[in-house]
Amino acid sequence: MAERFYNQTCCLIFAQQFKTMSNEQQAAQEKDFTRNWVNSSRFLFYLQVFCILAFVLGGCYRLYNQRYKGKPDVEVQGSSKYNPEYK
Image (tube, rainbow, N blue to C red; front, side):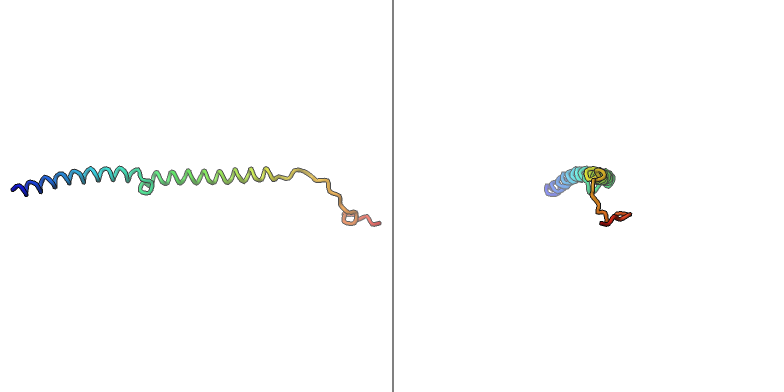
């Protein structure tokens, strides 16, 4: 009789512990990045937008720094002009 009572109370205690553990696991899974596709897709979207924006702005800055600074003063040989000048 005592053994039966002990088994029933143990089952009730463990059932309650399993219930709270499953609630804690469910709460942890809702916050987990790999399990919650809404939060993960939102994060990946903003990460993608930030990376594309960073590459575009970086490319524009690089092109601005290496831009053509103006017409250089270059001496052209007389024989290679449109109307060549020979000696």
